[in-house]
Image (tube, rainbow, N blue to C red; front, side, top):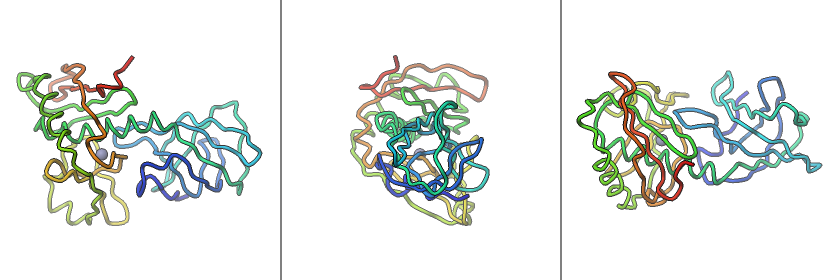
Length: 241
Ligand SMILES: [Zn+2]
């Protein structure tokens, strides 16, 4: 079942109401949601669904369902199940999601400092990484940190841009990620634009202005194989434990 993805238009929504359309062993499906399902390297949201009677259903993960734009809200096994047709109040763990948004947008910026094909990536609440197909000798932590923070300091507003599948096929240079296919569907592709810095297909959640990232730190650079040189970063004000 298709779920309306409210975070696409407004990633800053922390709460919303939505009707339950399906409950099964894989999760709870809603008519619309603010919960981002794991995808594009970004972890799925956690939070709570509040029933009309006040009962709180803890959501420990959010994943994509079997069909396009269907979203599965995964509750802890012991929790109560909502009834189909019931209207729930959705609340995401906002501090966690905001950290994911800041780190995710930071990776877009960093991918313009390290100019090489991206072979992998992951965004967790306390750290994020990109893997590059590049020689280790070209990766310098201090330079990456300095140049990424200098770009962030420009304080540019981000924009969502949609293009057709055909336009994307005609501009293969837009796709830096070799491991993650651009989010296609309905004949159009969503791009994140950071004017003057980056433009690439992405279905994730980003901050409105890159200044919200603050500054980043490079935690480590290591080789994970010939084509996977991993650069791991954290937010300066939100370092990993
Ligand atoms: Zn993105």
